[in-house]
Amino acid sequence: MTAQDHGARPSGGRQAQRAERRAAILEAAMELIAERGYRRTSLAAVAERAGLSQQGLLHHFPTKEHLLVAVLEARDRWDLASSAAAGPGSLGTDTLAQLVDYNATRPGIVQTYTVLSADSVTEDHPARAFFESRFRAVREAMAVALRAEFGESLPGGLTPERAAPLLVAVMDGLQLQWLLDPEQVDMPAAFRDFVALLAPATGRRGED
Image (tube, rainbow, N blue to C red):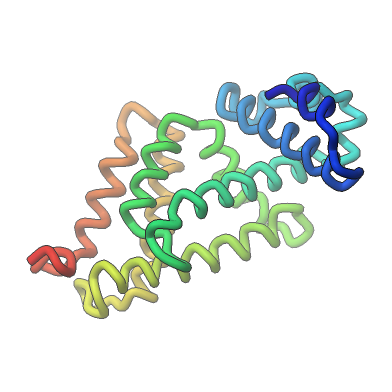
């Protein structure tokens, strides 16, 4: 559906129309970032694909950084929706493996996460609050997933709470290595190997 289609439908009010236009902008931005990478994705190109003027886009997202944060928030909502089967509050390592597979074909999205997360160490960066909240939520969800899959006892005396940030850090590191040299890093396989290291010697709960 094009942005023109969105605009042609009865909006049900100004708020609904605004939401539809934002959705069209985010969809266009995600498509372009996946195709070109975020550095080569301009606000003008996003506006054109969404069927808006650049001034119209700036009415919804005042800077490119604000648009990129909104893109990542939209991707997170998609990720969480796709992991609903893992249970409340849990991403699940199987679901994370599927997301790694998905991201491995979309370097532009991975690049956006990687660069913006580094830039957000600056206190006034638009992405800072997003990443602070995101890393906290992902760590908590990973701890729930690890406890459900492996119980309380992991190798090396690790608890799920201590293992969760390690798994998140490994995922981020794998993504950066893959961006630097995609021919040398099999990101999905490396992620699965690391998860296997976390499993107790008897295997996952319920599989022995």
